[in-house]
Image (tube, rainbow, N blue to C red):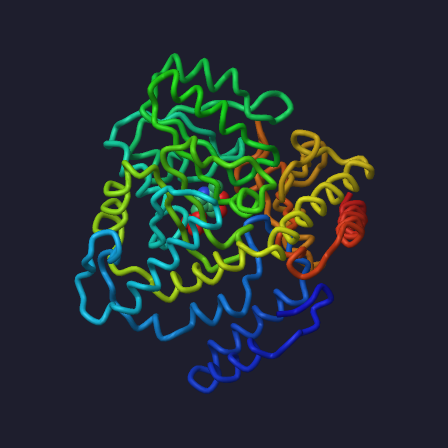
Length: 411
Ligand code: PLP
């Protein structure tokens, strides 16, 4: 890994790249270029992070060679539920990963560690509770939701009858609107969670509303899972029927997904992952997820997440001091949305200009955006990756001032 100034702390990745170059010069060269881009740039993409080299090594291990369709659960069923021989070690590994993830979130929920991604976790989560055509009440993409929360171009918008709750004038989730629409529509499932929402989500209020109308309650905590694990965001455990997450954002693990469920939905969740949505599990990634879970149980990780949140507040505060508008006026978590609607350039223009200046972030729609998702009137800014590299408040304040001077030169 490299530190905040891009200096290597050891040479693990570099050695690996030389090894790959011997097999394919082209691939090795492109990985090297990407490695240098990541090392030299200021990474502000809110959904990214740098996992540890132990996680990377587990993902690059011999487990990549193993087929293990099915589930282990040796302890609970007494038998391996796999469709292949030679699974005695991956069985133990997968059960260990499940135990560790329950420890991270201090829960007795069932956990399935096999989803290849967050989208697949959501696909299987819906499948476990719903039939095609059933009604879901959710948050739209431009208000901060994810594609899998009902976008018309995604399976969710095509398979289910989607309805959406709104954010209020300031950009906060409007709980009155959630309640009114839930009573009107009587959805089979209420979904919450977001990709671009900077405030605490009131899981208790959502659960109460779901209860009032007899709906299932599902939470996609992909972005904030690290904050939930570290106690920096209220937990949905004990409230939601199904909870999904990715492992590669604030959790700082390998690219992948997890599904947690109340025990009564365990069988439905498992069969919605395998054999419904997926074939063989990626045991090498499950090993990476297990290492990540151990790291997430540590005090160092809790300190890291606290710093992510403190950094984010300082970063947003500096933009406010410089006269910028931020959706909801601030942040409670690891990200915030800069509102560029009063400027004569788009989120896309700013993203490209910052790319030229070694700062990486992404364009993002803001509530009631008049521009298309390809242009946008906002950018999303996150502090998780650079906090991993050692940034503290003053570093982020300095980046805000750099971005401000780049914007001033654009006008
Ligand atoms: N859910 C949320 C809230 C997300 O922000 C994302 C990705 O950014 C996903 C699900 C999907 O994750 P993946 O890209 O692993 O499919």
